[in-house]
Image (cartoon, rainbow, N blue to C red):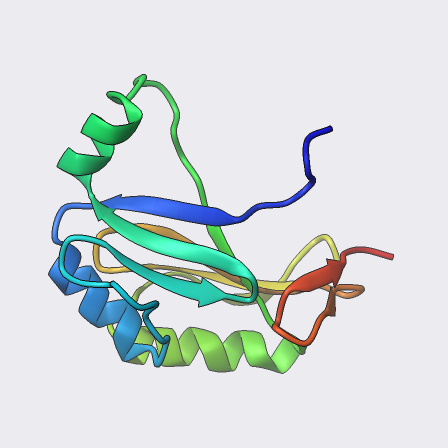
Length: 141
């Protein structure tokens, strides 16, 4: 049986020291062993790591081309928090992509990109239930 879990998300970076400063500047704590060659943060039970593109390609194999798009999600507890987190991220150096707005699916969301263009959705989803570490334990009605 394959466990139903997501343990780690790694994004490749062109300038790890700069991206490291951005994410650490958000107040996120680095895991032990983080440096300018690899950095990671535990976010609600999932490890979010940064790794230089050239090493990522040599470790995981070259890009297959095509669509390797992704959006990272940061769900919050309330509708109002979407606006607050969006503003804080922009103040910290994120680039605004879409302003906070009510979504057709009943929640509220906004998008920013980090200094290297990685997209983040900040969202409030009715019915999302969080555990003690901030992890989603139930999603939807």
